[in-house]
Length: 439
Image (cartoon, rainbow, N blue to C red):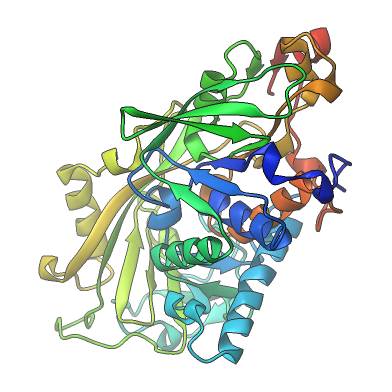
């Protein structure tokens, strides 16, 4: 249940825009749901990102799998909410001829797995529970199936779906812009000026490395993924909240290529009605690959999850897999599908932010922290700050739900789910909020 913050009617244009730092799926979704709620009220919303475009990190590089299963008990309600919101968008699009959402390729996702010699649903290398055994003939035709394998069905597509992530992100941006949301790329948040007694704060953005733009800001949402802790520290250097990433972060290399027949290399059509995802990790304890299809005839292969030191990574456009990483992934993928370099469409490498608590942080920073910094009462502070990051591998899957509950939190509305698992885990609040530590 969201605590009371401020009534929507109290938000006026004079108070300045709500600024969202981070144009990944979490930032886009937050802007979208907030703009829907404030439609017609002339409350500006600005989304700023230092990258050259939207969703250039994990949001635009993932495989776009959606579902309401595979989460721990505390995250499950958010997973179900997010899947429901994606499904509702698809249903509305289906009912309207020419609806823009149709371009994102929303389709049921049938999730399979295979075992080397015997059916073993308890295999610890599987990310999801197995619903039951499956005949090998049910596996997609693009897979090089071995007679010794045993098949397993994880989901029949009834509670799993897939979209094309880059297309969906641009769809969501278009919807935001129709609602009046402004987007700024190449925009680095440099500093923020808070003055006691003032109605707004001033956020300074550096555009393209040189131009400075000052933005009046009443609500600030930091949803910058792996960059969120460093960004908070830069904007609030004297507020000692030690936001930390987990000691090890997930990083994954991926390939996208045209589907071909598993035996002779001739082009084949993927299922035009449903996407298929195959988890191959039970076949080899030294391998951790999954391959999935789009209905347009393309395949997506993701390699083993690396775990790297939890430090702030470079901007997404500066993160590229090395030739060695690509060669190794291609070699492993060829064990399971026919892969010709001439059919390669794209590749990449993405960081997925995790926090020590293992669940995303989606909360309002206690206003007492900023009141103490300015030696003013909490009623007199000129900025409300919210955090939404740490979704790890599930950022896209949880994207729409996360944006929905963040908009509810900012607008002091009753939350769609219990938000207590996602609160900022302050260990100490000495000196009215200073010297706090995140567990």
